[in-house]
Each structure stands twice: as C-alpha cells, then as structure tokens.
Image (tube, rainbow, N blue to C red; front, side):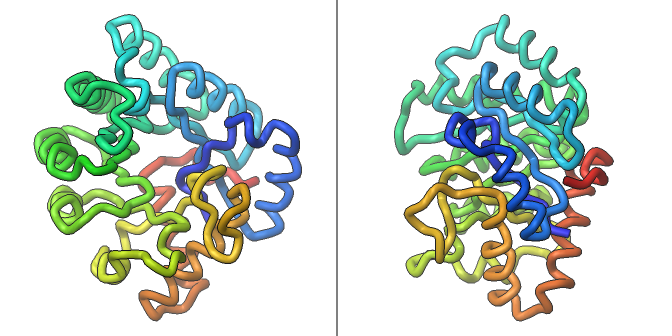
Length: 259
C-alpha cells in the first residue's frame, strides 16, 4: 500500500539499474511512486518516464536552484508539460536560502509564478523550503486559498513554517531524515493530523537509517513509514493504508494505478 510521494527517479543516478529499482520497490510493497521534476528538462524526463508505466506519476516544475532561468517562455513550457499524461502536480518549487544558487528575488518570483499556474490548473504544488521559513510561510498564506493543495516536501523546517502549514491545511511529507539520530522535530511527527501525512524518499538523496550513506531508492520508503508509525505509536499497516489514501487524495486518480 505504500506510496513514495517524492522521488527523483528520472535522475541519472538511476540510469544503470532503474528497472531493478522498480523491482525492489514492488518487493518492498510499494504501490506507487511520484517522480519529481525539478527543472524543465528534468520535468520532461519525468513525464516521459511515467507515460507508459502504471504505478508512476510525474510532477513538473522549476526548483529554486533553477529559478534564475525562469522566464515567460519557461512558464509556457511548464504549462505544456502539465498537459502531458501522468503529470499530477506543479513542482518542485519553493525557496532555498541555504545555497542561494539563484538570487532570492528570482526564487520568490518563480515560486509565486508557479503557484499562479497551479491555481489556474487546480493542481497541487510540491514545495521545497530550506532556511527560508518566513518567506515560504508568507507565500503559502497568500496562495494556499487558491491552490488545490500544498505538499511541504521532506519537511524539516521549524515551528513557524509548521504552524503556517497547519493553518493552510498543507500535507507534510516526511523523508528519511526522521530516522536520523539528530532529527530535531519529533513533536511534528505526532502533531501533524493523520489525514495530512505523506512519506517520501527524495531518492537518490537522504537515504534513511540503516541505508544512510548509500544511494537512496523508493524501496527504502518503508523505513520512513515504519519510523513514523513508531513515533505516532500506531499500527504500521493501518498507517500505511492511511498514507496511501492521503496520497490518492492529494495527487488524484492516477494514484490508483499500481507498480
């Protein structure tokens, strides 16, 4: 029943053994994988990957690292990508003030422009936030009422963004970071409403314990879900079913297809 709500399966890190990765995901009990686009080229690869495969969906968006390339032409390209079969959300977009690979005003402009496109298309938005909690919270409070849904991906932000996410009814997608010994926000794992929980790998990044240090892959989302069940002190199978229901609700009927 498990769904990996955020995986960079079209990344070159998976080129040598992508079919094997999918086989291991099935063996681990995965039902569906959401393949993330983080640039126009990466979104096109994600859409191509999922087109003829059951159990895979794609997103299309421009990551804050790439926001310096956002133009009116990029907006038109994104709209065209969102028309492709199997593309179910806008993103990964957002703000990243840790690396600042793009100027902050450019990040903000690209983020808000993608929120506008998502509102126009009635699609959910997959949001990246790193060391930009106040500005992400401000954008969410402005745009969330017009959006189909907000997914705060690999959530590890502090109380201000958590509170903003709760206020706007965002989905909190937790990654392998919650298995790390120094995970800083255990209270968030229990405070999040059960109908707003998702789990993800963010593969090939952020492999959970006991795979930390190796390439992450969708099969490892089981460790993330198991840790979430332990933190919430609930039956794992019941939680896995709830997580799958949440993913279907936010991403739509494409999530009914199985690997």
